[in-house]
Amino acid sequence: MMKQLQSQSGASVFQYALLPQSPLPAETIGGNGKATLLIEEMFEKRSQVDLTEGDTVQTGQKLAPFKTSDAYVISSVTGKISAIYPYPGDFGSHFTAVDIEVANDEMAAPIEDLEPTLEVLQAYLAEAPGKPPLHLLGDPDRPIHTIVVSGVDTDLLVSTNQYAIRTEIHAIAKGIEVLKAAAAPETVAIAVPRDLIAGFGHTGADVLKAVSPDYPAAHPKLILYHAFGVEVPADKNCEDMGYAFFSAESVAAIGQAYDTGRLPIEKLVTLIDKQCRVKVITARLGTPVGAILKTAGIATGDRDRLILGGPMTGTAIYDEKLVVRADTDAVMVQDAADVNLVSDYSCINCGECVHVCPTRIQVNMLVRFLEAGQYEDGAELYDLLSCVDCGLCSYVCVARIPIYQYIRLAKYEMARVSAVAEASDES
Ligand code: SF4
Ligand code: SF4
Image (cartoon, rainbow, N blue to C red; front, side, top):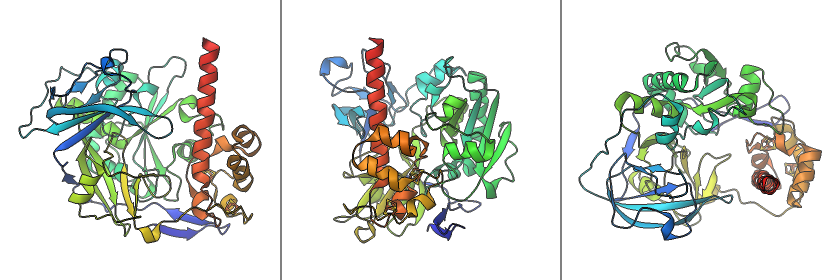
């Protein structure tokens, strides 16, 4: 369960839960004879792709079917392609979905020797479990001097990376060795829950940092602030300051690939049931969420809420056919009776959101601009871009205003408008 405390200001403060010293081995949950792989590229017409229904694929095979793009996915199963179709994501993202009917006999695709270079990493492991942000490395215009391996999970109840750091330390050490060889950062740091700091001496990381158990201390900008003494300006990201955050699971996946010569296909997922009980399972990439719930014995009813991610910042989904992807760290089921419905009440200026905000944004004022769609003004006058996306303001809002959802939409819209402006300047 989430542990709720009171801060000195009287605002609510949650603490991250710690896994037991030796967590139970993650149960492996199989699919239901079908996998759906999602490729990060919009599918517009059949002639764009070199794959077709009836083609067979092998486990670990790289599928890069677009003639005009390097987008790819690694097949997590052996079988026959049954459908290829466009798949809309949230916030304007588009994918191409490839359905595969799983065969009884599994075949492992051969893989060439993996050299520890950025090119090889980007060509084979960008879609590995944990989704390592390899695109951040090797950019001369935005050099990365420190890679931070994060063994903490940003949302409450989610234990995926904490599990990885407790159980996959040898693979993480290998992954760090590969990243050092490929990207030559000045420093590799590893961030772990404060209570676990003893016993992390053999990872190959240069620096060990402790993260406070107080939510939302595990958000990257807050780790930089509290553990490294680096303040990220409102309009910048951690990578602008030379820091790239890799989840512990993604570094373990890199290590496994180089240790075994096989591309990893199994994702750690924290499963949170209606009683907020937590267990970490493994499922192959592309496994439908419905198959995971069924195998885990979690029934969903009318009006229950299904969430990808944790309780503070996860995204509600409406279809159990949605699948586990490289960055799906948690699946949560909320009972209909516990779902906090949003309202269209006005802000009553209670100030709770301001008390609880870790970056001291005047959220009560900001929300007025966001509700009116005045995103630029909200950013300029009330510091929208200093928000670290913790969701606490939404959680405490007595008027049940979906503040965090407004914030996500505002940031997305501002980034979209700026990208369009940049593209038009370039052309
Ligand atoms: S504005 Fe809300 S989501 Fe953003 S940092 Fe403050 S409390 Fe968190
Ligand atoms: S918590 Fe909600 S009602 Fe209270 S000041 Fe903030 S936005 Fe207004």
